[in-house]
Length: 362
Image (cartoon, rainbow, N blue to C red; front, side, top):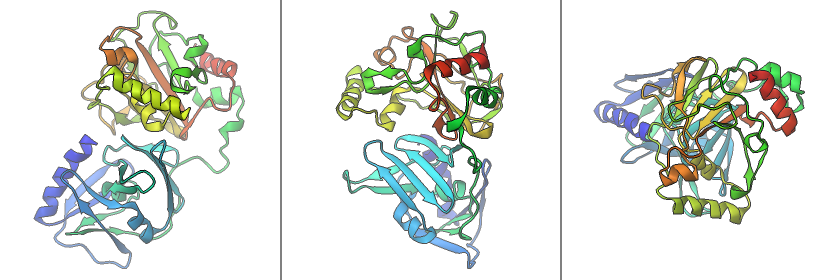
Protein backbone atom coordinates (compact mmCIF):
# COMPACT_ATOMS: atom_id res chain seq x y z
CA UNK A 1 0.00 0.00 0.00
CA UNK A 2 2.92 2.38 0.71
CA UNK A 3 4.16 1.84 -2.83
CA UNK A 4 0.70 2.76 -4.13
CA UNK A 5 0.84 6.00 -2.13
CA UNK A 6 4.15 6.96 -3.68
CA UNK A 7 2.97 6.19 -7.21
CA UNK A 8 -0.26 8.07 -6.70
CA UNK A 9 1.55 11.19 -5.51
CA UNK A 10 3.22 11.38 -8.94
CA UNK A 11 -0.07 10.84 -10.75
CA UNK A 12 -1.79 13.43 -8.60
CA UNK A 13 0.75 16.13 -9.51
CA UNK A 14 0.17 15.41 -13.19
CA UNK A 15 -3.55 15.55 -12.56
CA UNK A 16 -3.32 19.00 -10.99
CA UNK A 17 -1.33 20.32 -13.95
CA UNK A 18 -3.32 19.12 -16.92
CA UNK A 19 -5.00 15.75 -16.38
CA UNK A 20 -3.39 12.35 -16.51
CA UNK A 21 -4.00 9.47 -18.84
CA UNK A 22 -2.78 6.04 -17.87
CA UNK A 23 -2.61 3.01 -20.19
CA UNK A 24 -1.78 -0.43 -18.82
CA UNK A 25 -1.14 -3.83 -20.36
CA UNK A 26 -0.72 -7.01 -18.36
CA UNK A 27 2.76 -6.32 -17.01
CA UNK A 28 4.11 -2.95 -18.24
CA UNK A 29 2.82 0.48 -17.20
CA UNK A 30 3.04 3.63 -19.34
CA UNK A 31 2.07 7.12 -18.19
CA UNK A 32 1.41 10.08 -20.49
CA UNK A 33 -0.19 13.53 -20.30
CA UNK A 34 -3.02 14.77 -22.49
CA UNK A 35 -4.58 18.21 -22.58
CA UNK A 36 -8.10 16.83 -22.78
CA UNK A 37 -9.71 13.40 -22.94
CA UNK A 38 -10.71 12.18 -26.38
CA UNK A 39 -14.47 11.70 -26.42
CA UNK A 40 -15.71 8.34 -27.63
CA UNK A 41 -18.94 6.37 -27.59
CA UNK A 42 -16.95 3.68 -25.79
CA UNK A 43 -16.06 5.86 -22.79
CA UNK A 44 -17.63 5.52 -19.37
CA UNK A 45 -17.14 7.45 -16.12
CA UNK A 46 -17.34 6.84 -12.39
CA UNK A 47 -17.12 9.30 -9.53
CA UNK A 48 -13.86 9.31 -7.61
CA UNK A 49 -12.74 10.46 -4.19
CA UNK A 50 -9.31 12.04 -3.86
CA UNK A 51 -7.83 11.34 -0.45
CA UNK A 52 -4.47 12.44 0.89
CA UNK A 53 -2.70 9.40 -0.51
CA UNK A 54 -5.00 7.84 -3.07
CA UNK A 55 -7.67 8.27 -5.71
CA UNK A 56 -10.46 5.72 -5.37
CA UNK A 57 -13.94 4.82 -6.52
CA UNK A 58 -16.87 3.01 -4.96
CA UNK A 59 -17.10 -0.52 -6.31
CA UNK A 60 -20.90 -0.34 -6.55
CA UNK A 61 -20.54 2.68 -8.85
CA UNK A 62 -18.23 0.77 -11.19
CA UNK A 63 -20.53 -2.25 -11.39
CA UNK A 64 -23.48 -0.03 -12.31
CA UNK A 65 -21.49 0.90 -15.41
CA UNK A 66 -19.73 -2.32 -16.44
CA UNK A 67 -21.96 -4.94 -14.81
CA UNK A 68 -20.78 -7.77 -12.62
CA UNK A 69 -21.13 -8.81 -9.00
CA UNK A 70 -19.11 -9.26 -5.84
CA UNK A 71 -19.14 -10.93 -2.45
CA UNK A 72 -17.36 -9.51 0.58
CA UNK A 73 -16.62 -11.99 3.36
CA UNK A 74 -16.81 -10.13 6.68
CA UNK A 75 -14.89 -12.79 8.59
CA UNK A 76 -12.01 -13.34 6.18
CA UNK A 77 -12.20 -9.76 4.85
CA UNK A 78 -11.91 -11.00 1.29
CA UNK A 79 -13.47 -9.72 -1.92
CA UNK A 80 -14.54 -12.03 -4.73
CA UNK A 81 -15.35 -9.87 -7.75
CA UNK A 82 -16.67 -10.94 -11.17
CA UNK A 83 -16.70 -8.65 -14.20
CA UNK A 84 -17.67 -10.28 -17.49
CA UNK A 85 -15.66 -13.52 -17.73
CA UNK A 86 -12.95 -12.39 -15.31
CA UNK A 87 -12.79 -13.22 -11.62
CA UNK A 88 -10.77 -11.10 -9.16
CA UNK A 89 -9.79 -11.86 -5.59
CA UNK A 90 -8.47 -9.47 -2.93
CA UNK A 91 -7.69 -9.78 0.78
CA UNK A 92 -7.85 -6.75 3.07
CA UNK A 93 -4.34 -5.48 4.00
CA UNK A 94 -2.72 -7.72 1.36
CA UNK A 95 -1.51 -5.69 -1.68
CA UNK A 96 -1.83 -8.55 -4.18
CA UNK A 97 -4.48 -8.99 -6.88
CA UNK A 98 -5.47 -12.43 -8.15
CA UNK A 99 -7.18 -12.54 -11.56
CA UNK A 100 -8.53 -15.87 -12.78
CA UNK A 101 -6.19 -17.75 -10.46
CA UNK A 102 -3.06 -15.88 -11.58
CA UNK A 103 -1.43 -12.92 -9.86
CA UNK A 104 -0.88 -9.49 -11.43
CA UNK A 105 2.50 -7.88 -10.68
CA UNK A 106 1.36 -4.62 -9.08
CA UNK A 107 1.54 -2.90 -5.71
CA UNK A 108 -1.03 -0.29 -6.70
CA UNK A 109 -4.23 -2.34 -6.27
CA UNK A 110 -5.56 -3.18 -2.84
CA UNK A 111 -8.86 -3.51 -1.00
CA UNK A 112 -10.33 -0.48 0.81
CA UNK A 113 -13.10 -1.30 3.30
CA UNK A 114 -14.95 1.34 5.33
CA UNK A 115 -18.03 1.30 7.51
CA UNK A 116 -19.48 -0.91 10.23
CA UNK A 117 -19.58 -4.68 9.97
CA UNK A 118 -22.52 -5.68 7.82
CA UNK A 119 -22.70 -2.25 6.19
CA UNK A 120 -19.27 -2.00 4.65
CA UNK A 121 -18.52 0.19 1.67
CA UNK A 122 -15.97 -1.29 -0.74
CA UNK A 123 -13.57 0.96 -2.65
CA UNK A 124 -10.77 0.22 -5.10
CA UNK A 125 -7.91 2.47 -6.23
CA UNK A 126 -8.28 4.03 -9.68
CA UNK A 127 -5.28 1.93 -10.78
CA UNK A 128 -7.64 -1.05 -10.88
CA UNK A 129 -9.21 0.31 -14.06
CA UNK A 130 -5.95 0.57 -15.96
CA UNK A 131 -4.12 -2.46 -14.66
CA UNK A 132 -6.84 -5.02 -13.96
CA UNK A 133 -9.35 -4.03 -16.66
CA UNK A 134 -6.57 -3.09 -19.10
CA UNK A 135 -8.12 0.19 -20.18
CA UNK A 136 -7.08 3.82 -20.68
CA UNK A 137 -7.90 6.14 -17.78
CA UNK A 138 -8.31 9.94 -17.65
CA UNK A 139 -8.70 11.90 -14.40
CA UNK A 140 -11.09 14.85 -14.19
CA UNK A 141 -12.06 16.99 -11.21
CA UNK A 142 -14.56 14.60 -9.66
CA UNK A 143 -14.58 11.56 -11.87
CA UNK A 144 -12.42 9.20 -13.88
CA UNK A 145 -13.20 8.39 -17.51
CA UNK A 146 -12.14 5.08 -19.05
CA UNK A 147 -12.53 3.15 -22.27
CA UNK A 148 -15.10 0.38 -22.02
CA UNK A 149 -15.99 -1.82 -24.98
CA UNK A 150 -18.26 -4.24 -23.16
CA UNK A 151 -17.82 -7.96 -22.49
CA UNK A 152 -14.48 -9.43 -23.56
CA UNK A 153 -12.73 -12.77 -23.41
CA UNK A 154 -11.29 -13.89 -20.10
CA UNK A 155 -7.70 -12.84 -19.41
CA UNK A 156 -5.49 -15.80 -18.49
CA UNK A 157 -6.65 -18.45 -16.08
CA UNK A 158 -6.91 -22.23 -16.45
CA UNK A 159 -8.12 -23.92 -19.64
CA UNK A 160 -11.78 -24.91 -19.59
CA UNK A 161 -11.03 -28.59 -19.11
CA UNK A 162 -8.44 -28.00 -16.38
CA UNK A 163 -9.32 -30.15 -13.34
CA UNK A 164 -6.19 -30.83 -11.30
CA UNK A 165 -8.42 -32.00 -8.44
CA UNK A 166 -8.56 -35.35 -10.24
CA UNK A 167 -4.84 -35.69 -10.92
CA UNK A 168 -2.79 -38.67 -9.90
CA UNK A 169 0.61 -38.39 -8.23
CA UNK A 170 2.29 -38.93 -11.61
CA UNK A 171 0.31 -36.09 -13.21
CA UNK A 172 1.12 -33.72 -10.34
CA UNK A 173 4.83 -34.59 -10.51
CA UNK A 174 4.89 -33.99 -14.26
CA UNK A 175 3.18 -30.61 -13.88
CA UNK A 176 5.47 -29.34 -11.10
CA UNK A 177 8.75 -30.91 -12.21
CA UNK A 178 10.07 -27.60 -13.67
CA UNK A 179 10.52 -26.25 -10.12
CA UNK A 180 13.95 -26.53 -8.50
CA UNK A 181 14.52 -26.54 -4.72
CA UNK A 182 14.10 -23.22 -2.91
CA UNK A 183 17.14 -24.01 -0.72
CA UNK A 184 20.02 -25.58 -2.59
CA UNK A 185 21.23 -28.86 -1.07
CA UNK A 186 18.34 -29.12 1.39
CA UNK A 187 16.22 -32.23 1.71
CA UNK A 188 12.45 -32.50 1.82
CA UNK A 189 11.38 -32.99 5.44
CA UNK A 190 9.60 -36.23 6.23
CA UNK A 191 8.23 -34.86 9.50
CA UNK A 192 4.41 -34.98 9.14
CA UNK A 193 3.91 -31.60 10.84
CA UNK A 194 6.15 -29.97 8.21
CA UNK A 195 3.97 -31.15 5.34
CA UNK A 196 0.77 -29.67 3.90
CA UNK A 197 -2.44 -30.77 5.58
CA UNK A 198 -0.96 -31.22 9.06
CA UNK A 199 -3.26 -29.92 11.85
CA UNK A 200 -2.40 -26.55 13.41
CA UNK A 201 -4.29 -26.49 16.70
CA UNK A 202 -2.88 -23.14 17.85
CA UNK A 203 -4.81 -21.35 15.09
CA UNK A 204 -7.58 -23.88 14.49
CA UNK A 205 -6.56 -24.81 11.00
CA UNK A 206 -4.17 -26.81 8.84
CA UNK A 207 -0.62 -26.34 7.65
CA UNK A 208 -0.93 -25.03 4.11
CA UNK A 209 2.63 -25.41 2.89
CA UNK A 210 6.03 -27.05 3.08
CA UNK A 211 8.51 -26.31 5.89
CA UNK A 212 12.28 -26.38 5.45
CA UNK A 213 13.91 -26.58 8.92
CA UNK A 214 17.59 -27.03 9.69
CA UNK A 215 17.14 -30.24 11.69
CA UNK A 216 14.86 -31.91 9.14
CA UNK A 217 16.34 -30.72 5.85
CA UNK A 218 20.00 -31.64 6.17
CA UNK A 219 21.38 -28.84 8.35
CA UNK A 220 23.14 -25.59 7.64
CA UNK A 221 20.07 -23.33 7.60
CA UNK A 222 20.65 -19.88 9.13
CA UNK A 223 19.49 -16.29 8.52
CA UNK A 224 22.20 -16.14 5.85
CA UNK A 225 20.75 -19.09 3.92
CA UNK A 226 19.54 -17.84 0.54
CA UNK A 227 16.14 -18.79 -0.88
CA UNK A 228 15.96 -19.17 -4.64
CA UNK A 229 13.10 -18.37 -7.01
CA UNK A 230 12.99 -22.03 -8.18
CA UNK A 231 12.15 -21.33 -11.86
CA UNK A 232 11.50 -18.60 -14.41
CA UNK A 233 8.72 -16.39 -13.14
CA UNK A 234 7.70 -12.89 -12.12
CA UNK A 235 7.67 -11.35 -8.64
CA UNK A 236 4.13 -10.36 -7.65
CA UNK A 237 4.83 -9.47 -4.02
CA UNK A 238 7.92 -8.32 -2.12
CA UNK A 239 7.45 -7.15 1.48
CA UNK A 240 10.19 -4.53 1.73
CA UNK A 241 7.98 -2.45 4.05
CA UNK A 242 7.02 -5.40 6.27
CA UNK A 243 5.95 -4.45 9.80
CA UNK A 244 6.12 -7.19 12.45
CA UNK A 245 3.46 -7.65 15.12
CA UNK A 246 4.01 -4.94 17.73
CA UNK A 247 4.05 -7.48 20.55
CA UNK A 248 3.41 -11.10 21.45
CA UNK A 249 0.22 -9.94 23.18
CA UNK A 250 -1.22 -8.54 19.96
CA UNK A 251 -0.30 -11.70 18.08
CA UNK A 252 -1.97 -13.76 20.80
CA UNK A 253 -5.11 -11.66 20.43
CA UNK A 254 -5.29 -12.69 16.78
CA UNK A 255 -4.83 -16.32 17.76
CA UNK A 256 -7.52 -16.03 20.43
CA UNK A 257 -9.88 -14.69 17.76
CA UNK A 258 -9.13 -17.71 15.55
CA UNK A 259 -9.93 -19.96 18.52
CA UNK A 260 -13.26 -18.20 18.94
CA UNK A 261 -14.06 -18.59 15.24
CA UNK A 262 -12.61 -22.10 14.98
CA UNK A 263 -10.97 -20.88 11.76
CA UNK A 264 -8.17 -18.56 10.67
CA UNK A 265 -9.35 -15.47 8.76
CA UNK A 266 -7.31 -14.82 5.62
CA UNK A 267 -6.01 -11.42 6.71
CA UNK A 268 -4.73 -12.90 9.99
CA UNK A 269 -3.23 -15.85 8.13
CA UNK A 270 -1.26 -13.36 6.07
CA UNK A 271 0.11 -11.62 9.17
CA UNK A 272 1.21 -14.96 10.60
CA UNK A 273 3.25 -15.67 7.46
CA UNK A 274 5.50 -12.71 8.25
CA UNK A 275 7.69 -11.13 5.58
CA UNK A 276 6.88 -12.65 2.18
CA UNK A 277 7.81 -12.85 -1.48
CA UNK A 278 5.39 -14.32 -4.02
CA UNK A 279 6.46 -15.54 -7.45
CA UNK A 280 4.10 -16.40 -10.32
CA UNK A 281 5.21 -19.06 -12.83
CA UNK A 282 3.87 -20.69 -15.97
CA UNK A 283 0.67 -22.72 -16.00
CA UNK A 284 -0.89 -20.90 -13.04
CA UNK A 285 1.75 -22.16 -10.58
CA UNK A 286 2.60 -19.71 -7.78
CA UNK A 287 4.84 -19.83 -4.69
CA UNK A 288 4.37 -17.90 -1.46
CA UNK A 289 7.71 -17.73 0.37
CA UNK A 290 7.04 -16.87 4.03
CA UNK A 291 8.75 -16.02 7.36
CA UNK A 292 11.65 -14.39 5.51
CA UNK A 293 14.40 -12.62 7.45
CA UNK A 294 15.41 -10.26 4.66
CA UNK A 295 14.69 -9.55 0.99
CA UNK A 296 17.34 -8.27 -1.44
CA UNK A 297 16.83 -4.51 -1.76
CA UNK A 298 16.91 -4.64 -5.55
CA UNK A 299 14.17 -7.27 -5.82
CA UNK A 300 10.98 -5.53 -6.90
CA UNK A 301 7.44 -6.44 -7.89
CA UNK A 302 7.42 -7.01 -11.64
CA UNK A 303 10.98 -8.37 -11.75
CA UNK A 304 11.51 -11.47 -13.85
CA UNK A 305 13.45 -14.13 -12.00
CA UNK A 306 15.09 -17.50 -12.72
CA UNK A 307 15.92 -20.58 -10.67
CA UNK A 308 19.20 -18.88 -9.67
CA UNK A 309 17.65 -15.61 -8.44
CA UNK A 310 17.86 -15.07 -4.66
CA UNK A 311 14.49 -13.77 -3.49
CA UNK A 312 15.19 -13.71 0.25
CA UNK A 313 16.82 -15.30 3.28
CA UNK A 314 15.48 -17.80 5.82
CA UNK A 315 13.95 -16.27 8.93
CA UNK A 316 11.14 -16.52 11.47
CA UNK A 317 9.11 -13.35 10.91
CA UNK A 318 5.47 -13.68 11.93
CA UNK A 319 6.24 -16.54 14.34
CA UNK A 320 6.19 -16.33 18.13
CA UNK A 321 10.02 -16.31 18.18
CA UNK A 322 10.27 -13.59 15.58
CA UNK A 323 7.71 -11.40 17.33
CA UNK A 324 9.60 -11.88 20.62
CA UNK A 325 12.79 -10.64 18.95
CA UNK A 326 14.67 -13.93 18.97
CA UNK A 327 15.77 -14.10 15.34
CA UNK A 328 17.72 -17.35 15.67
CA UNK A 329 15.03 -19.64 17.13
CA UNK A 330 12.68 -21.63 14.93
CA UNK A 331 14.28 -20.56 11.66
CA UNK A 332 12.61 -22.09 8.64
CA UNK A 333 11.26 -21.40 5.18
CA UNK A 334 7.54 -21.89 4.79
CA UNK A 335 6.54 -22.36 1.17
CA UNK A 336 2.96 -22.44 -0.14
CA UNK A 337 2.62 -23.92 -3.61
CA UNK A 338 -0.57 -23.08 -5.53
CA UNK A 339 -2.04 -23.92 -8.92
CA UNK A 340 -4.43 -21.29 -10.28
CA UNK A 341 -5.06 -19.99 -6.78
CA UNK A 342 -5.66 -23.39 -5.16
CA UNK A 343 -3.25 -25.24 -2.89
CA UNK A 344 -1.69 -28.00 -4.97
CA UNK A 345 -2.05 -30.67 -2.28
CA UNK A 346 -5.82 -30.48 -1.79
CA UNK A 347 -6.61 -33.60 -3.92
CA UNK A 348 -3.78 -35.66 -2.37
CA UNK A 349 -3.23 -37.54 0.87
CA UNK A 350 -0.23 -36.60 3.04
CA UNK A 351 1.56 -39.73 1.85
CA UNK A 352 0.95 -38.74 -1.76
CA UNK A 353 2.11 -35.17 -1.09
CA UNK A 354 5.40 -36.46 0.32
CA UNK A 355 5.84 -38.71 -2.70
CA UNK A 356 5.28 -35.77 -5.06
CA UNK A 357 7.80 -33.58 -3.23
CA UNK A 358 10.46 -36.28 -3.01
CA UNK A 359 10.13 -37.16 -6.70
CA UNK A 360 10.46 -33.48 -7.65
CA UNK A 361 13.30 -32.51 -5.34
CA UNK A 362 15.02 -35.57 -3.88
